[in-house]
Length: 149
Image (cartoon, rainbow, N blue to C red; front, side, top):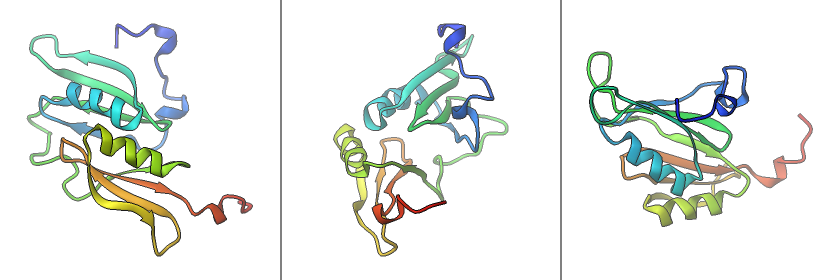
Protein backbone atom coordinates (compact mmCIF):
# COMPACT_ATOMS: atom_id res chain seq x y z
CA UNK A 1 0.00 0.00 0.00
CA UNK A 2 3.03 2.26 -0.04
CA UNK A 3 2.15 3.32 -3.59
CA UNK A 4 -1.15 4.82 -2.39
CA UNK A 5 -0.94 8.35 -0.96
CA UNK A 6 -1.55 8.43 2.78
CA UNK A 7 -4.69 10.57 2.40
CA UNK A 8 -6.29 7.86 0.18
CA UNK A 9 -5.68 4.96 2.57
CA UNK A 10 -8.64 3.73 4.57
CA UNK A 11 -8.65 3.82 8.35
CA UNK A 12 -10.56 1.37 10.58
CA UNK A 13 -13.27 3.96 11.26
CA UNK A 14 -13.98 4.44 7.54
CA UNK A 15 -17.24 2.76 6.50
CA UNK A 16 -15.52 0.35 4.12
CA UNK A 17 -13.49 -1.09 6.99
CA UNK A 18 -16.48 -1.95 9.20
CA UNK A 19 -18.51 -5.11 9.50
CA UNK A 20 -17.27 -8.49 8.35
CA UNK A 21 -14.53 -8.33 5.71
CA UNK A 22 -13.85 -11.46 3.64
CA UNK A 23 -10.12 -12.25 3.40
CA UNK A 24 -9.41 -14.86 0.74
CA UNK A 25 -6.22 -16.76 0.00
CA UNK A 26 -5.93 -17.30 -3.74
CA UNK A 27 -2.53 -19.03 -3.83
CA UNK A 28 -0.70 -17.03 -6.49
CA UNK A 29 -3.78 -15.59 -8.21
CA UNK A 30 -4.65 -12.64 -5.95
CA UNK A 31 -3.39 -9.94 -8.35
CA UNK A 32 -5.05 -11.60 -11.32
CA UNK A 33 -8.31 -11.96 -9.38
CA UNK A 34 -8.19 -8.31 -8.27
CA UNK A 35 -7.81 -7.19 -11.88
CA UNK A 36 -10.74 -9.43 -12.83
CA UNK A 37 -12.94 -8.03 -10.03
CA UNK A 38 -12.33 -4.50 -11.33
CA UNK A 39 -13.97 -5.59 -14.60
CA UNK A 40 -16.60 -7.97 -13.24
CA UNK A 41 -17.76 -6.11 -10.13
CA UNK A 42 -16.55 -2.51 -10.65
CA UNK A 43 -14.04 -2.99 -7.83
CA UNK A 44 -11.72 -0.17 -6.80
CA UNK A 45 -8.13 -1.19 -6.10
CA UNK A 46 -7.29 0.23 -2.67
CA UNK A 47 -3.76 -1.08 -2.43
CA UNK A 48 -1.34 -3.92 -2.97
CA UNK A 49 1.50 -5.05 -0.74
CA UNK A 50 3.83 -7.42 -2.59
CA UNK A 51 5.91 -10.05 -0.86
CA UNK A 52 9.40 -8.62 -0.29
CA UNK A 53 11.20 -11.79 -1.38
CA UNK A 54 9.02 -13.59 -3.93
CA UNK A 55 6.35 -12.92 -6.54
CA UNK A 56 2.80 -12.30 -5.42
CA UNK A 57 1.01 -10.31 -2.78
CA UNK A 58 1.07 -10.50 1.00
CA UNK A 59 -2.03 -8.32 1.02
CA UNK A 60 -4.31 -6.83 -1.57
CA UNK A 61 -7.43 -4.84 -0.85
CA UNK A 62 -10.42 -3.89 -2.97
CA UNK A 63 -13.60 -1.94 -2.46
CA UNK A 64 -16.67 -3.52 -4.02
CA UNK A 65 -20.13 -2.00 -3.65
CA UNK A 66 -19.01 0.06 -0.66
CA UNK A 67 -17.40 -2.83 1.23
CA UNK A 68 -13.90 -4.23 1.52
CA UNK A 69 -12.55 -7.48 0.11
CA UNK A 70 -9.05 -8.56 1.07
CA UNK A 71 -6.93 -11.06 -0.88
CA UNK A 72 -3.58 -12.72 -0.38
CA UNK A 73 -1.34 -15.13 -2.23
CA UNK A 74 -0.15 -16.55 1.10
CA UNK A 75 -0.55 -20.26 1.64
CA UNK A 76 0.95 -22.29 4.39
CA UNK A 77 0.57 -22.70 8.11
CA UNK A 78 -2.76 -21.28 9.18
CA UNK A 79 -4.12 -21.20 5.62
CA UNK A 80 -6.91 -23.66 4.92
CA UNK A 81 -6.46 -26.01 1.99
CA UNK A 82 -8.96 -26.37 -0.81
CA UNK A 83 -10.94 -23.91 -2.88
CA UNK A 84 -11.84 -20.55 -1.36
CA UNK A 85 -15.36 -20.55 0.07
CA UNK A 86 -16.00 -24.19 -0.73
CA UNK A 87 -19.28 -24.07 1.19
CA UNK A 88 -20.37 -20.48 0.79
CA UNK A 89 -20.57 -17.45 -1.45
CA UNK A 90 -20.15 -13.70 -1.45
CA UNK A 91 -23.40 -11.72 -1.66
CA UNK A 92 -23.82 -8.36 -3.38
CA UNK A 93 -26.98 -6.43 -2.53
CA UNK A 94 -27.45 -3.75 -5.17
CA UNK A 95 -30.25 -1.65 -6.64
CA UNK A 96 -29.47 -2.67 -10.22
CA UNK A 97 -28.77 -6.40 -9.92
CA UNK A 98 -29.43 -7.19 -13.58
CA UNK A 99 -26.63 -4.81 -14.62
CA UNK A 100 -24.24 -6.26 -12.01
CA UNK A 101 -25.07 -9.82 -13.01
CA UNK A 102 -24.72 -9.15 -16.73
CA UNK A 103 -21.40 -7.28 -16.26
CA UNK A 104 -20.00 -10.20 -14.27
CA UNK A 105 -21.00 -12.71 -16.95
CA UNK A 106 -19.61 -10.47 -19.72
CA UNK A 107 -16.28 -10.27 -17.82
CA UNK A 108 -15.99 -14.06 -17.63
CA UNK A 109 -18.12 -15.31 -14.73
CA UNK A 110 -20.33 -18.32 -15.39
CA UNK A 111 -24.03 -18.14 -14.54
CA UNK A 112 -24.88 -20.76 -11.91
CA UNK A 113 -28.41 -19.56 -11.17
CA UNK A 114 -30.10 -17.11 -13.54
CA UNK A 115 -30.88 -13.63 -12.28
CA UNK A 116 -34.64 -13.63 -11.84
CA UNK A 117 -37.48 -13.00 -9.40
CA UNK A 118 -37.35 -15.47 -6.53
CA UNK A 119 -40.22 -16.95 -4.50
CA UNK A 120 -39.32 -14.70 -1.55
CA UNK A 121 -39.82 -11.61 -3.77
CA UNK A 122 -36.27 -10.41 -4.47
CA UNK A 123 -34.43 -10.58 -7.78
CA UNK A 124 -31.43 -12.88 -7.31
CA UNK A 125 -28.88 -14.84 -9.29
CA UNK A 126 -25.50 -16.48 -8.81
CA UNK A 127 -22.28 -16.60 -10.81
CA UNK A 128 -18.97 -18.44 -10.40
CA UNK A 129 -15.82 -16.47 -11.08
CA UNK A 130 -12.72 -17.97 -12.77
CA UNK A 131 -11.21 -18.60 -9.29
CA UNK A 132 -14.04 -20.86 -8.15
CA UNK A 133 -15.75 -18.29 -5.93
CA UNK A 134 -19.53 -18.02 -6.03
CA UNK A 135 -21.05 -14.53 -6.08
CA UNK A 136 -24.76 -13.95 -5.53
CA UNK A 137 -26.34 -10.75 -6.79
CA UNK A 138 -29.52 -9.63 -5.06
CA UNK A 139 -31.85 -6.70 -5.67
CA UNK A 140 -34.40 -6.45 -2.86
CA UNK A 141 -38.08 -6.45 -3.75
CA UNK A 142 -38.88 -2.85 -4.74
CA UNK A 143 -42.10 -3.04 -2.72
CA UNK A 144 -39.93 -3.12 0.41
CA UNK A 145 -37.82 -0.06 -0.49
CA UNK A 146 -40.25 2.55 0.77
CA UNK A 147 -41.12 0.83 4.05
CA UNK A 148 -40.29 2.66 7.23
CA UNK A 149 -37.53 0.98 9.21
